[in-house]
Image 1: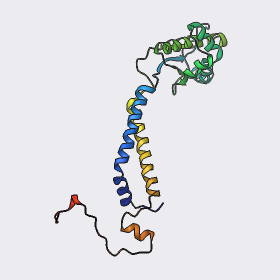
Image 2: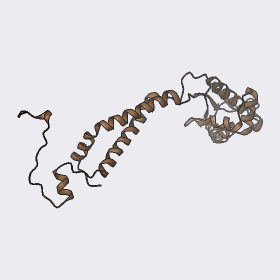
Image 3: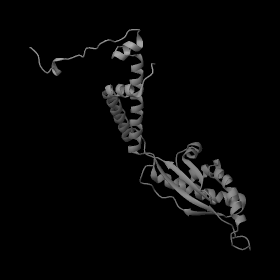
Length: 233
């Protein structure tokens, strides 16, 4: 592809502006249809749990020390795996009577540590907002029971119960349309550049001099009937 200076490049895009606008508008229409009619709404509900010191079965002071917090934070990785363990998921499914496999339910659950704390957030994403709420609460309860059974301690405290979400978490019409608009612009610009690369027609005097050994001595402007200022009919 021949080198293009900025002025010539702008001229190319300006001359092809209609194609760029049409391709971009088509992309916007496709993005609008996709966002409104093809994206399945999904809802998120989450619980927040904190790992606290278990003093129910001891005579130790209930005061929490930095070492207790450090131990709780060290357990977060283990507890995160326990939330999504097969036994926890299986019991959750049985308790709620939902028709899902353990692997499907596992994909809907996300466990994340709240930064610089001994807290976990258990998030469930589902197409049914009520089921997302129920699963989040139940899996948290089952998880807390598993901790008590395995470690013989009761140190999982639920700070926030899951609530029913009324707003889909995966739908943002403005963002989707903007993404398709950007894609449309990129495609249209690529189309213009590729079309120009394969276009070997002579457009101006510079094209003659750059592609041949000829020198342009004079150029005659093209005048059609619309831009004539006078003359004999």
